[in-house]
Amino acid sequence: MRIAEFALERYFARWEFAVRHLLCASDVEGWPMADLLALADPETAALWAGLRLGYSEAPGHPLLRAEIAGLYDTLGPDDVLVFAGAEEAIFCLSNVLLGPGDHAVVTWPGYQSLYEVGRATGADVTLHVLHEGDGWDLDPARLIAALRPETRLVVINAPHNPTGMLPTHAEWARLTGELADRGIHLLADEVYRFLEFDEADRLRAGADAFDRGVSLGVMSKSFAMAGLRIGWLATRDRDLLARCAAFKDYTTICSSAPSEILALIGLRARDTVLARSRRIVGDNLVHLDRFVDAHADRWSWFRPRGGSIGFARLLDDEPSESFAARLVEAEGVLLLPGSVIGHDGNHVRIGFGREDLPEALAGLERFLDRSPVGAAGR
Ligand SMILES: Cc1ncc(COP(=O)(O)O)c(C=O)c1O
Image (cartoon, rainbow, N blue to C red; front, side):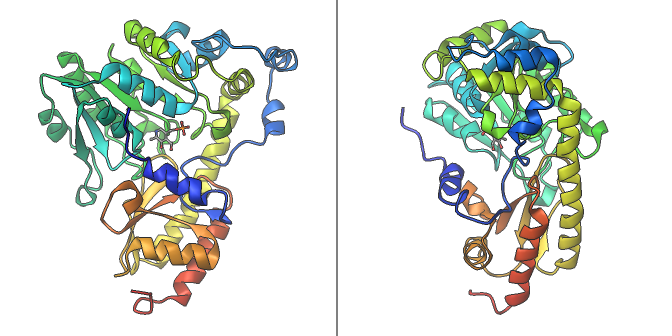
């Protein structure tokens, strides 16, 4: 397989552990291990204490699959397949569903593997481009018009990385209804699900919407446990799940046994876990709202509707790459220029899931004060 470099992951490989403040991370501040273990119930505490480090069950620990199934309205444990993060699930599903002669439609800008793996299979991938002028909104009519007889897969990530876009319930119903009628699979990348700022906006999960709807979930984002590397696909399409399971024999075979138990503890305590994530994200948004108001002459953004990231536009003439390079050098604060994800609109991705956001923003503000418009290195 020949595949293009994953530019965003290469950027993080260079910077993530070399800077003081990550102001562009997509995950929520990771749980301290001791705090997570303190949430264990008697059953999971015993599983943890008695854990043997052998291979684990290939589809995922039965209790973990049951807990994941509980996140959906219409699924049981056998409708769930556990992976090493969302990333492995994307890789397996794209390879199983796509190949030469097939077509896929994928929202863009976005997380690169959602379209790059499909391209690497030889499939033709149409990007459904979100425009800032439309408030980054999905355009169901335009997306439906892009479907072809050979379209096998539509990929929609909502809440969306990097814009925080979330379709309305009516748009979602129209899209899922159309895909159901045409027998096309949907990969609903729901890794930021449960972080909708208004709970009433939470969409029906892709897997609940129709038989060929596939929900992608992970412990990394809303559940704030990226280090577990536990993700999953959930769908009522058992045949598809079986094909993904067979493909996974060539990637990881089965999941990390300790991570499965830790994920189980986290999901059983999900009310506590999600309340913490929502508190972090909510507090940070207050700081960001104030920042954008105070610097409206230099920054603009469509406030995200969910998730832990937004896509803000730098209004200065300076390209966002050189702004970000000067900022990290001066203050140790990392932003992600839009160009890293192939976008040329002078935007940066801002992540607001980390607890040090107030200090990171203070560094950014000091930097802005020191380089007023006109004084920037153009
Ligand atoms: C939209 C989206 N999907 C999938 C992933 C992959 O998640 P993980 O790294 O936990 O496998 C990410 C990570 O940033 C993401 O933003």
